[in-house]
Length: 267
Image 1 (cartoon, one colour):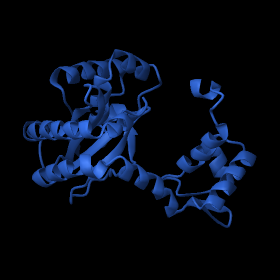
Image 2: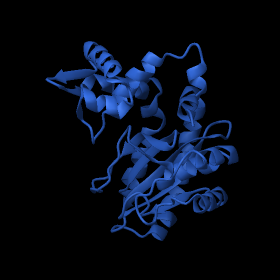
Image 3: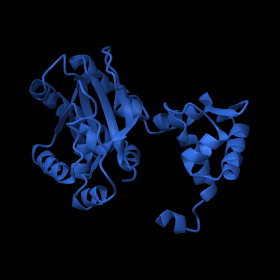
C-alpha cells in the first residue's frame, strides 16, 4: 500500500508486470478476458498492456490468444549473470547434489512464498518438480520455514496475520499455533525437515543462509523421495553437509555483497 502512495510509483508498470506474471503452468496461453480476470484489470487496460508487450516482443498474439515468448528469459538471465550466482552458489550446490544424489536448491523469501534462485535436480523424478523461478508457500516448505524462523518475531507475526495458511496434505502446517511452535523449534536446532508437507512422498531438510551481518537472506536444502531414505536418516546424513555448504556460500557472499543485498529482497 505504501508504494501506491509514493508519487514515484508507476501504476502502468505494475499493470504490465502483473500481465507478464499472470502466465504460468496452468495458464500458458490466455484470451484477453482470461488476462483481465487473472490480473483484476479491466479488459481495456489489459488489452493496452498486452499490445505493448506484444510490440516489445515479450508476448506473442496468436489469433485471440496470447502467450509468452522466450524473450522473457532475458530478465532471469540478467539477474543470474549480474549477481554472480554461478560463482557464489552453483559450484557448492552441485558438489552437494553429486555427493548425495538429492535435488539441492537455494531459495529466498518473496512475499508469502519462497522463490527458487538455484536448483540442481537429481536424476530421480519427483511428481512435484521445481526449477529456477518456482514458487511455493512458506509454510509448506522446509526452506520457507527456516527463513521465516530467523526473520524475527515481527516478520512472523505479520506473516501469520497476513492471511490463511494453504494446505497441501494432511501434514502441511496450516494452523498458526502449530506453525509458530515449529518455528521456535527451528530457531533452537537451526534447521527444518519436512515430510509429506508440500506433497506426499517428498522429504527435505533445510538450513538458513546468512549474510556478513548475520541476517538470514536465503535457505538451502536437500530434497528427495521417501522411497530412498527415511526422514531421520536424511537429517543425520545431510545436515552436516548442508551446514558446511551454507558456511561456504556465506563466505562467498562476503565477496559479493551486492548479491547478499539482492537475496534479502523484500518480505
